[in-house]
Image (tube, rainbow, N blue to C red; front, side):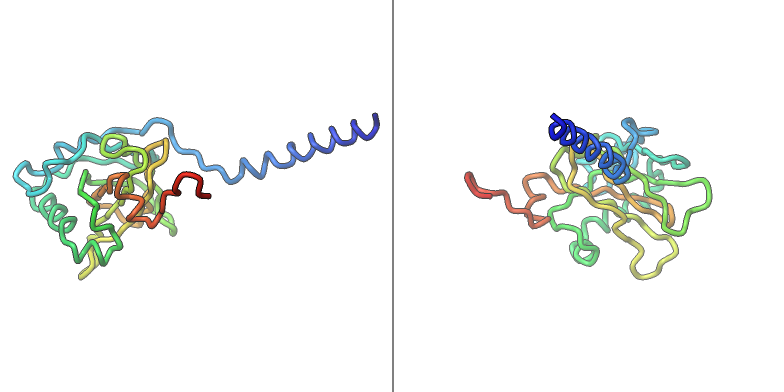
Length: 194
């Protein structure tokens, strides 16, 4: 009986000691975005290739806001950059990625040394399994003014996080889930394969 009791106590203690370790690695993200930005209004209707843009993007971080890109020249620049195969190759963006949204993101406050992490709810433009890239225009950099600040294959929460050290126009490019596996090099196993 003592052995059974000791085994039971050891099991309970093991589980109790493991709980803080499991909890410390978790990252919480808001279940609902702080605000929704309509992206259908964020481009010029005559900008080439922008006809398949999604509906909304949600922001989930404090001190951030976004609005539709109202400047036609900026909207056209986003479309031109995201349709330039060489620029996308230089950025490491899949050739299968399609522009789905563009917004102008801003932040109020001092930007910390490591940047500001902003989770975006992209359920209005992508689905589970899609590969999403966040491209950001760096206003102060000549020659290579665009950078990838975040990318992810979407899971159940349909969000992707970008890390920003400055704020300006942001483009969201999506690779359909059927093509995302090829873009990330993930091979689906055959039946019976482990």
